Length: 336
Ligand SMILES: *Cc1c(COP(=O)(O)O)cnc(C)c1O
Image (tube, rainbow, N blue to C red; front, side, top):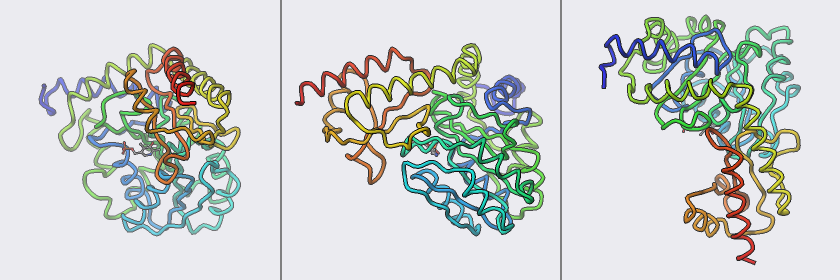
């Protein structure tokens, strides 16, 4: 291990930074924290809000963002749609035009339901409002970034945050977050931004290729290598691979007679949620799959037993999914 204030560590962060910028499709610095994505969820409302947040909720993780907003003492209003539905541009813009909000939160990829919301269209609708430049757009892309098209600069987003352990296929413990100049300028006007996740302090250190507190050096080495792998594949090819895995998963799920939980047209590129309308025993299925070195996820929260989720993100390939589907076919034939 090198010390986190040694030049070797600065070199490591300097090596990672331009690669992260390519994955986030941004010229802004991408903040790095010894945390998971939830840390930056907290930072985003803590550092950029003076008035009120519109929390768009369509599942468990966007719901968490509303809880985080309240937990940090910020005023909020929840705009909730039925789980399985996407957040759409018009109703969001309609609510934001009043001028009472200075930020909006959206989960790009609701991992609990397998729904991807059209963040680019939502951002465009917000920026087209008379007060569109005053709104901080906060996007949770924990389970989609690096596996989905999320161009931070082109879409004019303000905060785009993610964790290392999902589509990046890294160990848990690192969080990454792009922050716009608009959000940085806003942060200067916000009191009580906290200490560990203060965007201004994080950025001050990042300009010197450091982090304010100790950085998880070993995880940064892993990130440096994995970012090389990601960029060697290329973002275009990587995004296309995720879409191909999504389409194949949908084909298997619907071919078996399961219904999709996600509203048509908003199926996530990284995780597919199937309605368990055939009432298979998901715990038994997972026990069987474990014996073959695989596992899927049960439905989230009160969707447990009523749905199941198949992840297709990170380093997985179509061949891995074929192996999974073959095993699931075997299980289902034997169960009947
Ligand atoms: C997993 C997840 C989170 C929480 O991420 P942590 O890394 O556990 O903090 C937040 N939002 C979404 C959409 C997720 O999938």
